[in-house]
Length: 310
Ligand code: GDP
Image 1: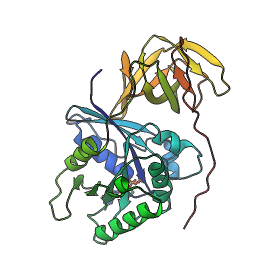
Image 2 (image 1 turned 180 degrees about the vertical axis):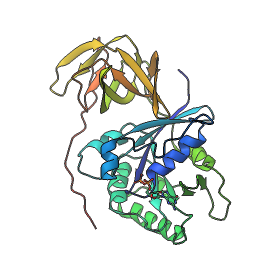
Image 3 (image 1 turned 90 degrees about the horizontal axis):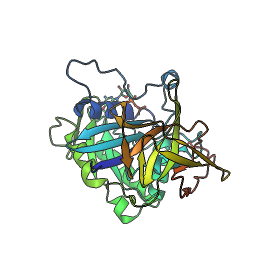
C-alpha cells in the first residue's frame, strides 16, 4: 500500500483543548458526511472518561488531508498509568503540543513533553484558545520555549513550528495577525513537519501491542503500529509473550482507522497503526510477529512516575 501516512500524538494538559481541536480536524477532514450529526464530543467517547472529565485511555483516530492518512493518537497527560505515555509515543513520528494561550504550560504539559523530547520527537506547538479575551499568546510561547530549554531540548526541537488556534472556532493560523478561517494550516504543518513513518517492508512482521480493546463479536483486539513487514487478514502470526513464550494463531480480523470508525483491511504494511483480532491472551508491550521468524521488539519498561505538581 502506498498511501502516504503521518502518525502524530497529541499532548496537552487537561482542559487545554485537545478533544475540541481533534473534533475540529475531524469535521474539516470530511469524515462526517453532510447532514450527519456530529457527536458533541467525538473523541472522549469513553463513559468513564466522561464521568471523570479526563482522558484516561490512549485513543486512535484518523483523518485524511489531501491524500494523506493522518493517524492521531491521544496521549494520557497524567502519570498514574506508568509506561503508557512511552508506548503511545513509540507509535508516532511527531507530536502536537497544545498549550492554553492564557495558562501556558502546566504540569501535564511538562510531563508528557519531557517524554516526547526524550524520544527525539520534534513537537509542533499549538497555542490554543486564542479567541479568549484573556489570551496571552506571545507570553505562552515564551514559557513554552523556556520549558523546552529546561527539559534539555536540542537545537532542532527548540526551533519548533508554532500555530495559533481556536479549536472551538475551528481555525488554526501561522501568524497571530492573520484571519483564521479553518484548520488547513495545522494539516499543512503536520504534512511538512512530521516525518513519514520509517519501517522495513522486507523484514518479518513486527507489531508492538500498545492498546487493548474488546469487542463481543471479535474478542480481544490489539492495537499497535506495524514497525516492520506486512500483515494480512487471515494469515498465521506469532505472539511473543513477555516471558518469551510464543503463541501462534490466525489474524481473524485486521482493521484500520477512519475518523472514529474502524474499517476492515485485507493487508497493511510498516508505518500503519492497526487493530488486530485473533489473539485472546495478548498483553500490552508484547510483539505480534512472523511465525517463521518470531522476533520481539524490546518491551517498554513500565515505571510508575509521580507527577510533580510544581
Ligand atoms: P481537553 O481536556 O484537553 O480534551 O479539553 P477540551 O477540548 O475538553 O476543552 C476543555 C474546555 O475548554 C471545554 O469547555 C471547551 O469548550 C473549552 N475550549 C476548548 N477549546 C477552546 C477554544 O479554542 N476556545 C475557547 N474559548 N474554549 C475552548
